[in-house]
Image (cartoon, rainbow, N blue to C red):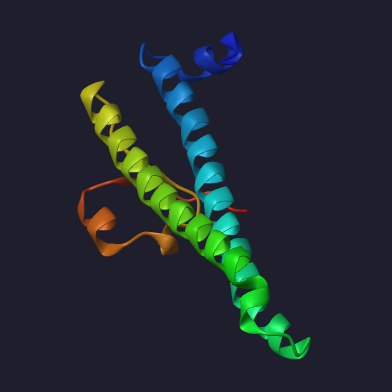
Length: 127
């Protein structure tokens, strides 16, 4: 929720939009990180299944169905990652539509060259 003191601190009519945009950006960054963590976790699980059957000296059929489901889950998560990146780009466009310059918040070293070339205002926040 946007507090009135935060709005007053900005001292302009776009302050509520800027505060809301910042809050949404933080949520977007958290969502991107959560999806990345899920992709990594499921990929590690899938990678471990063939090794587990070898170590247990059992046939490859033992975990085959589980491996297939894990790989399908990983594929779905990768598609989700694509969608959250599209969400990111759409949010940048929405900022432009309301008259705000999209900003990079956080570690800008993670940005691709295309993002830097788009003329984003860069605000680095120390972690």
